[in-house]
Image 1 (cartoon, rainbow, N blue to C red):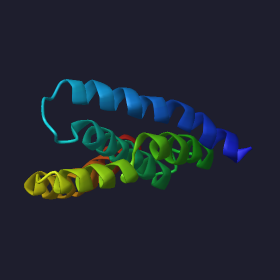
Image 2 (tube, rainbow, N blue to C red):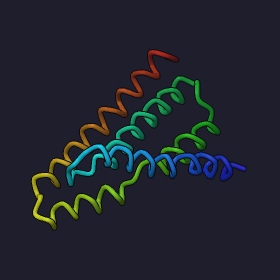
Image 3 (tube, one colour):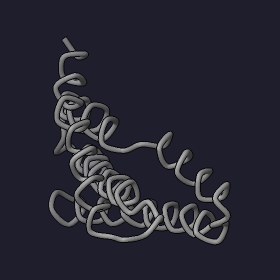
Length: 124
């Protein structure tokens, strides 16, 4: 039965990733992958909040499967991040490739900590 929760979350997360990526990228006239950056940072925020809620006893294991594994697993994308970073480097935009890596890691970790902090405020 747990796998159904993961699938249900992924059914929402995958199209949300695609739609968010296309919407964000269409508003920026640049080769920088803003869409992937956005979904990854949002996913880190959601997962950080969920983790903080679980630590406070406010999120069940079923909710963690639904939102953490299913939704966030399908929403975020390490493979696309890697591909887009490699593509930037191959196209000669090495500075943007490095900026993508650094900004993604810093923003993602910051968002996860912010989410955990928010959960502590709400349920701690």
